[in-house]
Image 1 (cartoon, rainbow, N blue to C red):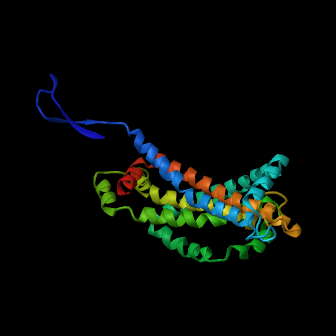
Image 2 (cartoon, rainbow, N blue to C red):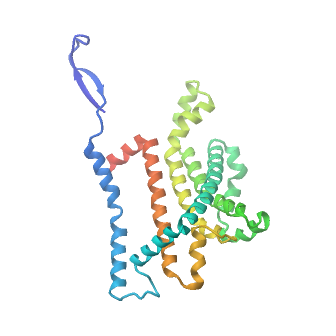
Image 3 (cartoon, helix red, strand yellow):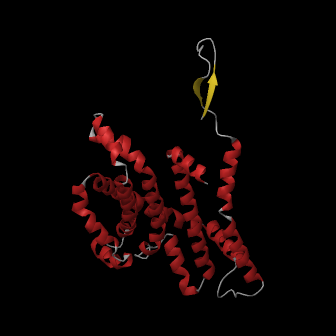
Length: 286
């Protein structure tokens, strides 16, 4: 947005200010795309070093398969349909777990952030549960919910609650109280203040929590799919250990990393769409 002066018949006063919206230059978009692409430079360099170490015999195949071998194994798994079935099963579990845990964490964070009563009611309990080792609750979930899909989804949901809750609580509490006080003076209702003022200002922190929780959902798949699973990428990584198929294990590890990068890219893109003003501030700070 630029400010220009104009004088015409309808506005005879010279030098009158006018606001004119100018589109974002294409060079700026290209610069942002280049900056995102540059983030892949280090992973590519590490893959090249890994391939070189395997090709020149510094690392044996029993210790570490080469990236080309791992890629060939992933292609074979994809052609056989095993990899696709595993991805679909894992995405269903991770998606449902994230929706349940993230939604609950968002609700609890908003209530505790807006109300001291809500904070006193359950914040201490959530902080205690947050410090419980994740693997320690797996036997309890098996006893309580059986060995079907329920314990897997609920384990992922449990892992996703805390990142969203903590970031939502922090974002709501860090809203400037003077803004809320001014809105109250002008007669805004509490619900309108929460939806029109607090929510937009807390949204950057909430998006950080969602971004972190989606990564946690993928990580918790490994533990969740140990509970009598017969499908999923976590099961695919653990199952071939008996036959020492390090190429499959490494392939799943690389697949996890690519999925994590893809999910992070989706969240960053959504954040840029939802918070254009926040993106502008970051760009000017660079």
